[in-house]
Image 1 (cartoon, rainbow, N blue to C red):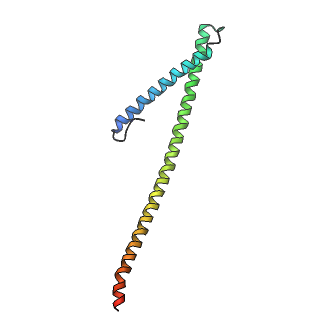
Image 2: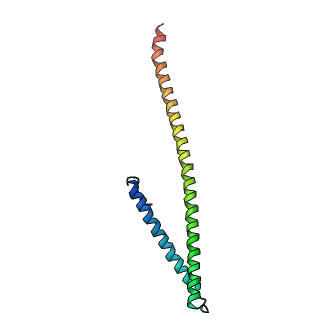
Image 3: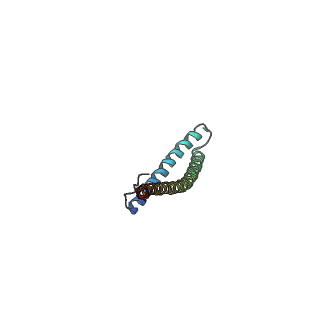
Length: 121
């Protein structure tokens, strides 16, 4: 997210790890909040059971979040590959167009140079 291309690789790795830990911590906090909201109506649960349900809910919440992050990362990798391929194809087409245009200009210049020579003969 924030590790720019100008950062040394070790700094980028550290920044990515910190961001990952912060993301997991935020997901855990969200999971705990959601678990507390989920168990709130169950006033018949004793404290131990409530805590157990909340812990399981939080663990499942975190597992779902990680699964979602993994799918997102995989999709981002695929999209990056697709865009890189399209960019390479665009560069090839642009180079081909430039070379064709340069050949046309050189051919036209050659014709302009040959017209006076042929006109004298």
